[in-house]
Amino acid sequence: MHLIFCFKRHSVMHQILQSYQNHLFSKLCKAGELADKDPTPMLRRLSSFSCWTISSSNWSSYALIQSCLPTMFIDLFVDLSISRQSAMKVVAAIHNNFIQKLRKRI
Image (tube, rainbow, N blue to C red):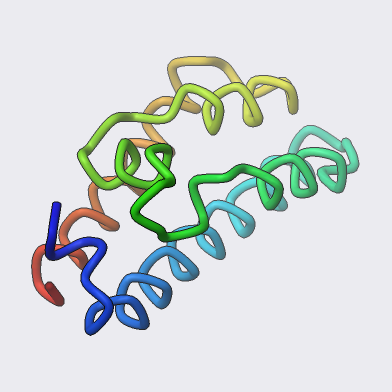
C-alpha cells in the first residue's frame, strides 16, 4: 500500500488512473452509440466517483487498485442496455489492463 500512496509515485498513479478513466469513457460512449442512448449522464456519474483521487484517506482508490472489480462501472453499462455479462467482460478487460500497467510502472 505504501507504494501506491507514496508521494514519489503520485504522478505515475494519477496518469494510470486517468488512462483507466479515459478507457472507460471511450467504452461507455461506444455503448451509448450502439444502444442509441446519450451516455452523458453515465459519463458524469463515472467522473464523479471518488476512486479517481489518490490519497492515503481515499479507500475507494485503494480498493480499485487491489483488483476489486467495480460493480458501479458495470452498472453504468447496464444502464445503457448492455447485458450484465457483456459489461462484466468489458470492465474486466479494462481493469486487467489497468492492473498490468500498475504492476509495470510501480
